[in-house]
Length: 129
Image (cartoon, rainbow, N blue to C red; front, side, top):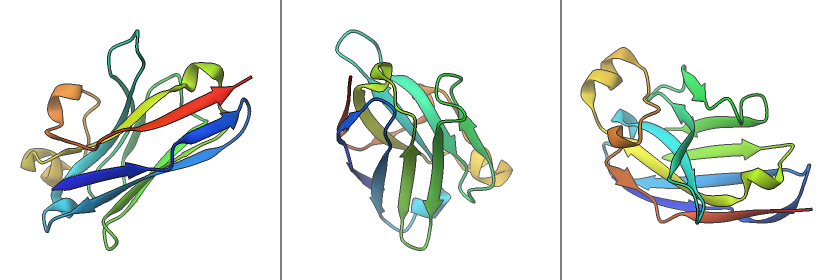
């Protein structure tokens, strides 16, 4: 699997933005997927994850209720719709894929950075006041 993230940009506080992650490879559908983010002063942190079927989603407490993760396996795409953006959401956002088959069989996803083997290149989101 290879991943390409896009959709970042500058948005005013309270605004919305949608990130996309395009995947390639026949095994895309087998992977749980996630978004992480990182700033210059903080380690890469979990944002949201989605199981291979899309039936199960997970969010960090800081974004729950504001962000929505989704995927389209036929198009090999994953999206993150972000609304009510806050200054503290400013970061580089990375999409990631977890190929572990046990999570495929259980239709779950992990919030641990160590679970993800393939990473996109990152896309910068800047929330301005």
